Image (cartoon, rainbow, N blue to C red; front, top):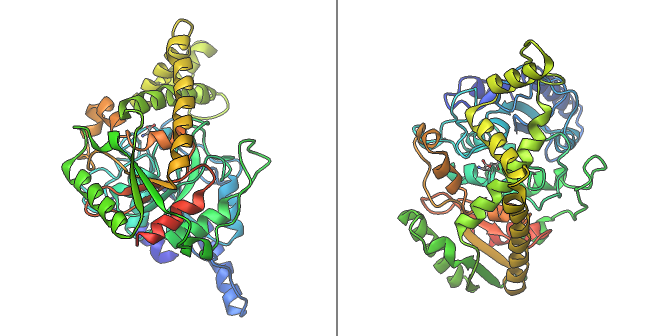
Length: 441
Ligand code: GLN
């Protein structure tokens, strides 16, 4: 634990917002005592992990990488994190990310841009960039990210590790700072399918504190090793046959298809929404939800309050001064799509499109067992580039956001030299994505 803390302390990738040194050492000492007494310890006991800085862990800073919450300390602990603590895992770091999950590069942060684990001139990906880089660099054994529209899967891809967005609701969102509540998911990033499985099992389950959480079955080692149930694999033609996709990523993906065919699976091309429709639907709903969710951050109950002549003025200054440009863009955009005169044309249309997208997925899973896709159309940008062109950044989420709208389980696995391969299954069939990843090994 001390070694990992030192690595984090000296790291030049800007992955750590705060270190949990005293807590970690205290927990480690307890595990040491157990071992010294000859007691058997659990699978996760003593294992160091990182937490994206949007999860509550009582008594620790939870900043969302934002100026507004720079000095905020959690008053309680998130359910998922509590379950990991109960299993004996040791939290060592609160990890840098895009502020409130707003972004795809981990540059929208007051703690400095997260640098890619493989090439530090490039972005670490986002929004769970610090979490992905920490795992890739072996600073943590696993990290807990948050995925609203790709934030676990995309940084996992950019840093060539595994990252799972479980079925929506499989892991309780209680204690995860809300971005877009209808697609927010809690999930692990790690270096192996087995680690993903173990951590997912520990965190899963219905929680009375999150009404959208669901009961689920434990995924056993045997289930993952099963070779029989997956026969047909689908992919979306629209994702591959367009000009936006990087040639290397396309070639790697086509090579994956050949490999999958060679293993005896049937591969089917599927029709789907154009990726720009997925991006516009997702951003309409995500901005609307975040405008609503972040309205509570006015400096009264939480955050750096800036005093002014009257209360209303104080709210305005507190929010204007403390939110980042990207977060303000989303709040303004979200309030616009929700406002009278726009909501019928934009927000309600977005809701209707989301239903159609889900319906389409349901039909697809009548025909295929899993769907594969690239994680991103582009390779990781240079640090600084995404900030100049937010629209290009939104469009880079083209392949991840659809599965979020569908609330489907999706896993990123490393693929060739590019930004990873996504494996998606029908709702609640999280076991399939792990099983198929195992079959591709
Ligand atoms: N990049 C997407 C966004 O900015 C997804 C982020 C996320 O999943 N938190 O909304």
